[in-house]
Amino acid sequence: SLCFRVSGIATFCWMGEQAVVVFGTTNGEEKIKVFTYRPLGLQFRCRMPLVIKHIQAGGQAEELQLQLGWEVRAVGDQPLRGMTYQLACRALLAYVAPLHTVMVIRKAPLDATSVAAFSAKVGVCVQNAEVVPYLRQFGFKAKDARSWEQDIEHPQLRLGLIDGHREHRNRKRDHTWYRIIGKMFSGDESLPQQWQVERRLAHIRSLMHDPVKRELGSAYNLYFFASHFASRGGPPGTSACLGSWLAALSVVINVKAVSPALVASIMRVMEIPFPDHAAGRTLPGSKPVHVATLNGNGMSPQGEQEKEEEE
Image (tube, rainbow, N blue to C red):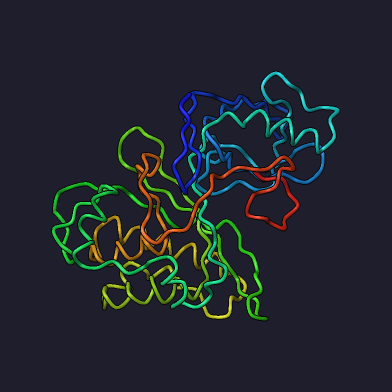
């Protein structure tokens, strides 16, 4: 294994470990699945047996074709039958702990509720002279702030995985923060870069939706005809609308329909980690990050109020 600490960011460990988990299907069969990294992308009921109640879209569990309603019967050679819920969770967590982590979780800037405060805290602005070298660090090739190099492949982004939201009170007002999980695929055989951020709808509207709509002009409806942006006030269905819009935005970025300058700005808003951040590079204007994991009680370090077990 190889472990080292990047000052001010996190401890990263790469280990050639695998976790073999035995599941019982809804029709009584047993399925063996091999996990190679964390997070697993699963959420369980908070009682025995450990039954899958949610599968994260785009996560490892979905890639392994797990299904809702399956129960965890054994981790490695240790059966969970007869264990309490707490002991079963600890057994699962301990078993998958050696797996390397491929997701970075950004600390939510909960005190920066306004667009201006958020922009200043995260460092959204990218000067024209900075665009080309900034994007190059991710593998994107731009001629200048306005135009892309042609016939050159660049990494593919996948945004739109909304993994819940939470309410946070700031200055006697409740604000909704949406949890967004993104991926960047480099095109080689390496694992995709994954990260998680929390953003208010106002941040995404002002710093992503509005600039994209202005730049695309009449072409905006060609890309977003089936993905309308979420309405103000967070009515029911907001997460779904936001996820659909972000997915369409991913296509816009991947086909180079908007300028390098706008892509660089969006990447700052989303705080996308550099592919080589573990080599000691830090993001301009970023806050410290921590590796996605669970504590001994099985709860996320984000301090989620949900009681269900998640990994």
